[in-house]
Image 1 (cartoon, rainbow, N blue to C red):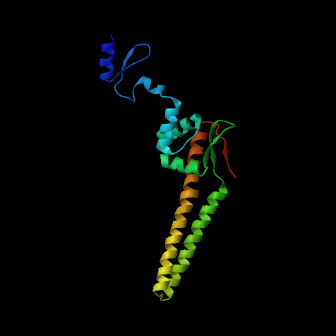
Image 2 (cartoon, rainbow, N blue to C red):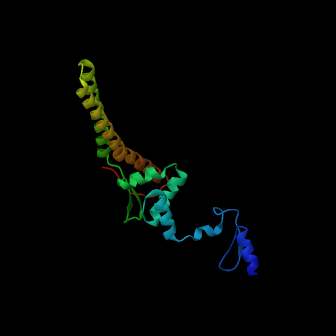
Length: 180
């Protein structure tokens, strides 16, 4: 009997605690797969996404990853800037998307574009020297870096949180969403 179990396991099957033999076509299709301890699931999720969160929130985030075309990078970015967070009162995922953050990002990008246009027009109208060209291109590089930061830390996480909120509300999950 034991030899039969060992042979079965070697051929891709599993033996339950009761001694029943289950043959699975693959690891993903095995009914014993769900017996992974919660700590292992949390550890794997944190390794894959960079997010440590309670089990209920992890399950919601996993559902968003698998069913709604979110990437781990998008969700992790929104989690880091607190556009997505865990609400301990309800035990669910909470979104935070203030309008001020949206307007801040838009105004900053507009100011960057306006300032670059002013500097470029000055470069076109006046014959600059080497120092002025160096200053112009250094300033452009700095403004492009700041524009990247505004998009990366304000606008993209907010957009992800808005998408998450619309999915949670469409699923009729009473996820508290705050707007200010």
